[in-house]
Amino acid sequence: MKIAVLPGDGIGPEIVAQAAKVLETLRRDGLKIEMEYAHIGGAGYDAAGDPLPDATLELAQASDAVLLGAVGGYQYDTLARPLRPEQGLLRIRKGLSLFANLRPALVYPELVNASSLKPELVSGLDIMILRELTGDIYFGQPRGIRTLDNGERQGFDTMLYSESEIHRVAHVGFQIAMKRNKKLCSVDKANVLDTSMFWREIVTDVAKEYPAVALSHMYVDNAAMQLVRAPKQFDVILTGNIFGDILSDEASMLTGSIGMLPSASLDANNKGLYEPCHGSAPDIAGKDIANPLATILSVAMMMRYTFAREDIAQRIETAVRKTLQQGLRTADIAEAGKQKIGTAAMGDAVVAAL
Ligand code: IPM
Ligand code: MG
Image (cartoon, rainbow, N blue to C red):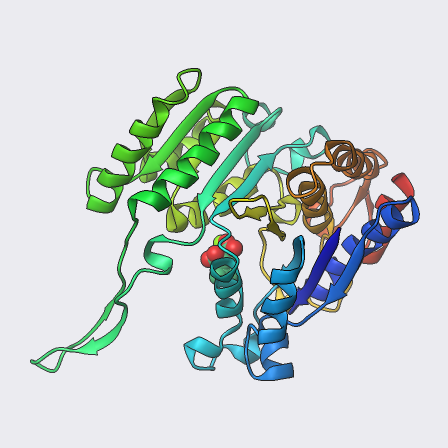
């Protein structure tokens, strides 16, 4: 298991250090794990003048999986856009063709009270959001800021999906649904956008190959509402890059904290990049208060999807459950009567439970 480790910026290094403890524990148990570190994001810019240095992309390409922390920081906000930390993330996703982004929103029984919704709405919640990750308005050309003949300036981006891009992510969606409750809701804005009309047509077509899966379609504005009205109606949500970005942040709040949400970004051969859904949180960086569980749970996803080791994935997830059952909480999920601990202590607790 050759793993490229890219801690990145802000809280990235702290949370990745906890996930690395988990990997080291598994290695001591006999797994053949190799970890090699490289820079990405602001750290890439500081080290090599590039948010995705060549050496980092080459390491990622030569690895089976990538573990990533987070990118971004105030000090980089004034850089030209190609040099900004986020570009490192977008380029590595594109560079590795990681088109299928899995963002599970799972409510642990121990955390039902941490959710901003009523416990009965979220208890037992288990949704998988599948976000297309290498297309859409994120990558469509042309884009830019231009000056019209009358002197007025205009910003523009291009929303764009080709048939093959929709096709391959739809297949992944149906295959995931087949392993779950066989319900897939495709989210779009087909009442307004041509791109979405086309998306809906292709998804409907692919559905014919999966007669066991119940396919529904929902407009994204309604989906945003339904997620906080009755989230348990969803099993798998399939959607494009920009809608998936927004809906997955929304869904994270159902689970209590975005600090609990892992993700997997897969290519066609299950090579993957694994990262928490949250950002670099520069305001709390270096304070040992960030929640490392999303990153640790991302390692579980790595074992499940890239290395096909469901047994180890479950062992990690069970260890996380145990630490929650012990009443241990980082600040973001703290409650009265529970023990508030820091980032490193939470990492140690998971390792002990492993
Ligand atoms: C995410 C993030 C990224 C995205 C940013 C940091 C570029 O919000 O992974 O959801 O928009 O994809
Ligand atoms: Mg996002």
